[in-house]
Length: 226
Image (cartoon, rainbow, N blue to C red):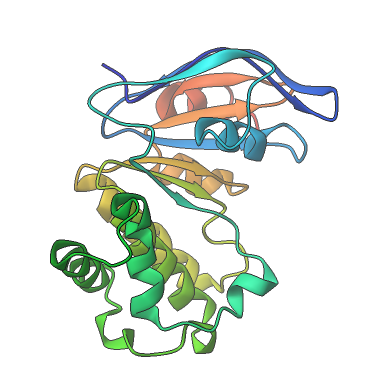
């Protein structure tokens, strides 16, 4: 059973439709890249999957043992977020907040999960550092560790390499690939068609040249829709 199923979605904002009658499904362990022109509805679709925005029509269903609260999210960073005055450990632990409910503290298991995710993303040595003092690549690793504290099943990533230098970009793509190979489903918005066709298992191209299917089928369409 798919983890995410979008059925006949029509999406828009301020009365303007940007996506009409969109249907697709994401299975466990898939690596889906969402690509397309600016204004084609990529971020609107991601916010709808997250439940942050209601569709104009259609529905988003979860399955395969996935709860709507078990979706890790790595949004694009704003200038304010990059200057957040908290320690790396505090930022990573905050990914457990949905698990806490009304409990005003982190459990021992949640603290241990944060430590394990920092080790997994090779930032354990930065635990006491102030988040705003880190490089862009280090900050993205921190936010990815935070997202992993929310779920071990599926991650939604909105332009995770935006603003990173080439080395940090390559490192981030390799890290995401490693997480996917470990069984975590990835849904990622990207403007980088080359990276999408290198790493993804499936491509969703929004806009006039719509496509949803496997990477190989996408490449067979005369080198893709880019």
